[in-house]
Length: 187
Image (cartoon, rainbow, N blue to C red; front, side, top):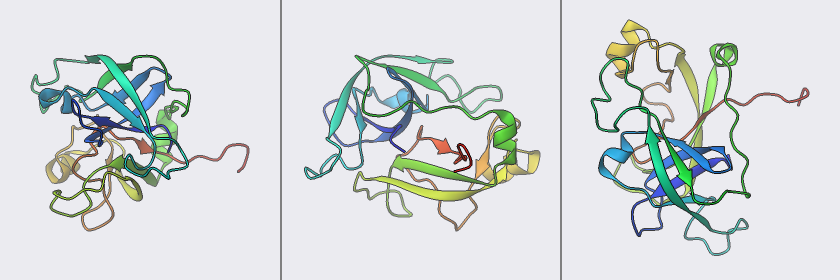
């Protein structure tokens, strides 16, 4: 969970979008967030406003971002991928980069952990900027045609996780990680 980061607007310090460390100096996030915003800092921690947080409040200045395509160039079109990578100025030594799961592991997974800083109400209007997490069931590993109609996903490109009425991600956590918990050495 320490690899999940919050990205901030220009001079604000509260996370408005999420991401995940994929290297000590790289964050993977959602490209659509870069359409309207220029993130300037990444926050690593649980609560950016809690001075008693055992993990120090850590902000890292961001550098250039790279998107697979221009961020606002029709991301909803088939074949477009909502992915961007942002370089951190310097490197993060307080959290480990995330490891990517292979296709077999993803296909065998029945539940995912979602993590992010987002709204705390169903309307998506209230947030306390705490890092939150929940377990969600795997609905589809490939986004079938019926999933595409029901969940507005890209067929054969996206995972569908979480069912209506169950715990789910929220407004403000775009780009945050979808995690698989795996056993290491039988633990």
